[in-house]
Length: 135
Image 1 (cartoon, rainbow, N blue to C red):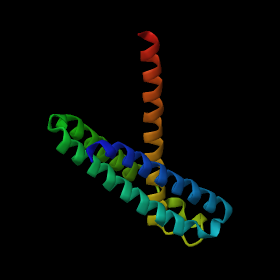
Image 2: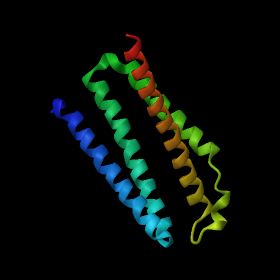
Image 3: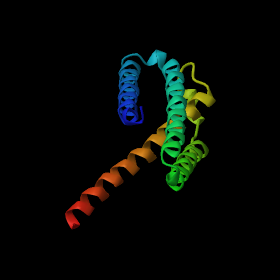
Image 4: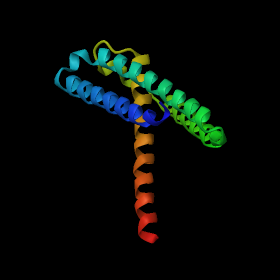
């Protein structure tokens, strides 16, 4: 079972990504339903966070020596979430129909966390490429 976990994680990531793309297209095509899609996006974000924490715990059960990496990963997720939430500004909610300040702040926080994670992924790829070239 443990050898199938990376495959399950990849498939789950692809499915959640495809749902996100479909929601983006639906919101772009019909802006009137944006608040409902934002709520669905928050649910997917929470589910993804739960899956990430469970994968950390599972990695810890499989490899108890990796507790340091698990701790660093959990701390990074927590720090990114806190930075995103406290820097989020929900003041532009008045520009949209049927959007509350809380929804606008949550949407801003999710965008900020996406930007941080995307930047980190790009930096990791660049670092990997540069390290390969140097070796």
